[in-house]
Amino acid sequence: MFYLLGSIVLNSYLTLAFKVCEKYRVNTFQAIVFNYITCVITGSVVNGSFPVNRAVVGTPWFPWACVMGLMFVSIFTVIAITTQRIGVAVASVANKLSLIIPVVLSVYLYQESVQGWKLTGVMLALAAVILTCYPSAKKEDEKGKISGKWRYLLPVVLFLGSGLLDALINHVQKQFVTAENQNAYLVTGYLSAAVTGSLILLYGLITGSRQFAWKNLAAGIIIGVPNYFSIWCLVRFLKSSPWQSSASIPVNNMGIVLFSSVVAWLLFKERLSVINWLGILLSLLAIYLIAFG
Image (cartoon, rainbow, N blue to C red; front, top):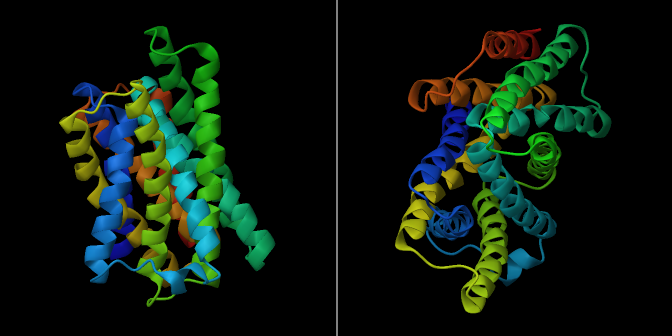
């Protein structure tokens, strides 16, 4: 349970951190790039040395780690934009209720069963997405923060991208990741994200379309250390979970939705309507049914 709680708290922290970045006018993309550089350094410290070498390049998980890194950069950027322009609750729900994608793939690839109360829980989880997400997005749209088409497109992109990323992490940890190579796998993924982001950032700095600021670097460091351990906890949880991945991923994701939504309500005064609260209550019931149904 320690790894599950760690994944929930740290992933929620990442979403909430972008709300703080908006307040202090931190350049989101620069913070994301410096965050991944920090992740590489953090993982190397945890490992005792930089774990990416010639032997790692030949492993079967190396290409998957590189793809994971590319997805990290793109999805993290969409999370930041969605959080700042629509709201923490919407970003969290669209991000983590993408659970339906890895659940379906777990059933297809690993012959896991989703039936009875567990299936009811998955369906309630999807209902919780709609109830928690739509009214909040509508309120923010009325404030003129984001246009109508983006109000729907951003959560959809986030839903698909996060679902595929969760499925990729689950597949790789099932097929290739061990206690011995887990850190090398994570650092490789973060290195891929850091290199990709750094090239884009460097081009922007050279052409003058982006301006460096020390607060962006500081934000990247503050985000980066928890970010590394958020995936570290997730991989450990999936490895040691008493449930099948078709149950573990929904429980983890719903926990993140609940925690981040309530914290956003308490700290950032994000208003939650009666319908929003109904969605949160449904998500609690969904977690129970998926985990214990």
